[in-house]
Length: 123
Image 1: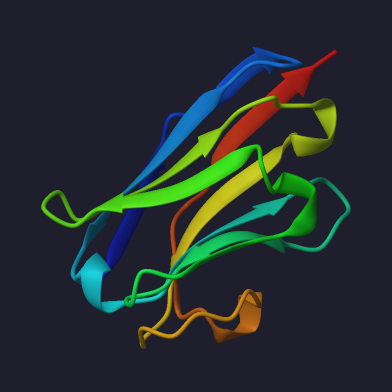
Image 2: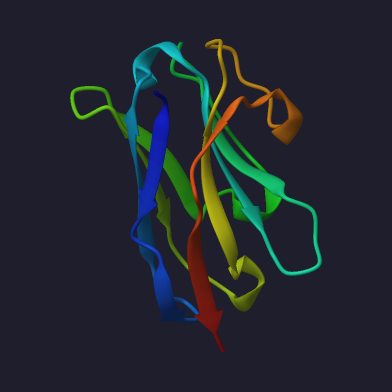
């Protein structure tokens, strides 16, 4: 069955970097819209970035220029490179997939979700 497993999170100082990985099984990353979402305590889960099957990417404004979404089709793995991290980026980060290749950065259109991976950024 479909499984998305995130890794690479942890604790860093402000200004530091982390790379999250999402290993997918039961679906082919190259055929799907893939996305990263995050949720801080007491807040709604919000879209961070998406990568469509056609190769288009999209980012929420607050991470543009700092985060990069990418994928390795041969490894069936999605990545999120996070640079210049700030405490505002502290959240549980989730990998997600749609059932189609077209991307919309809205959580309700994503059908499959990983278990989450915590990112903590301290001042």
